[in-house]
Image (cartoon, rainbow, N blue to C red; front, side, top):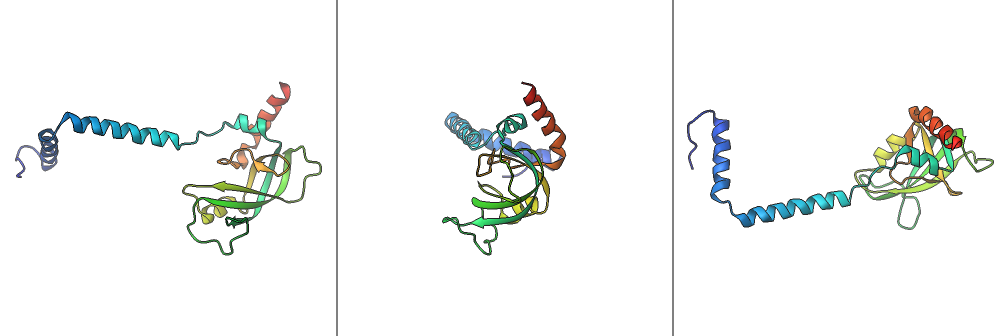
Length: 176
């Protein structure tokens, strides 16, 4: 197949591609492509998890704590720490130990000097990226229950600079 010499080479390539598509066009292929694109779109929406608004997470939190994470461990299927964690693992269960610095709200009196909780996460999250994101950083943790589980499995922390917004939401909640 030869390119026509009208206009630029890029224009000629585009014309050539469309002419190939047009030559092999059939309604059945179009219907099949439409159905497949609809199927892939539905699958993508089925696997997306909408974020829980901060207002809802603050309202459902029993404990709102500004803390520094001191230790992150990867747990195997039996709940025992994997030492060392295998590089590049995904779909992991983590055990995080945090040292509370400021307690904004808690129904646990007194609050332990360090809290340990587990959480699972799958996707493009590795042990290395979680460790870099959490350990040694001052973050806000929204937790619930006596076992201090995160309010949301996908949003276990809030940035430290969200403190004022969280305090406002707590105040608004008290006024209700």
